Image 1 (cartoon, rainbow, N blue to C red):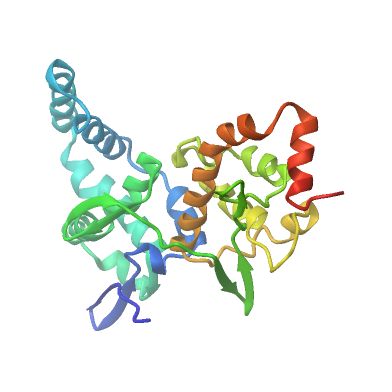
Image 2: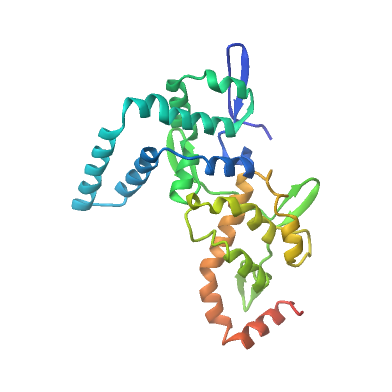
Length: 273
């Protein structure tokens, strides 16, 4: 497919920056997540997100907070602090011409970030992937994926199973792999809290070769295997698992009367130690 990204030249040197999930490797997103975003910038995003959900007095209160925050943003923030962070993001997204970044002035850095890259920061703050289309921020909907390739090997998402006429996502997954991934709590905590660093492990827990069963040792061996997988694949798995975890309470109520019933279900699904 055709690779689309930010391209240009400066001082006779070409540069290319990734600006979309389908081209962004997991390791680069982890790099962005580990950058220290300016506190005032993060607060801006948080307040504007709150504003869209409120009415009446509560909304007026947030508007006052926004006004107060914007009054506190100094020339140094605008000319130095924020653009320094934008430059760090550009560095993480650059696939050609990193030496050009230092020559990009603060106004151009701000324009590039605001018009083409701000969805990456918003995704971390809102704990949901966002898209930036025509200057408008929207929720990102990842593609539906069943398999993908890494180093010529095909890895598969967990399979569904149909029980009593109901399709259960990840119905063939063992309880131990759920527990392993749930320990990392990726579906329930904000990505700004360091959980993004655990996504390669999360991928290793659930993405396996055809007919492979869960193995803790193999999962640990593969923890860094998925660093170059693009984020559209990662988000696809993340949403898939999140949907399953939200349904897990209903699943347990439906099929379990204690450990004995859980074992019966596992047996029905073909899992026997």
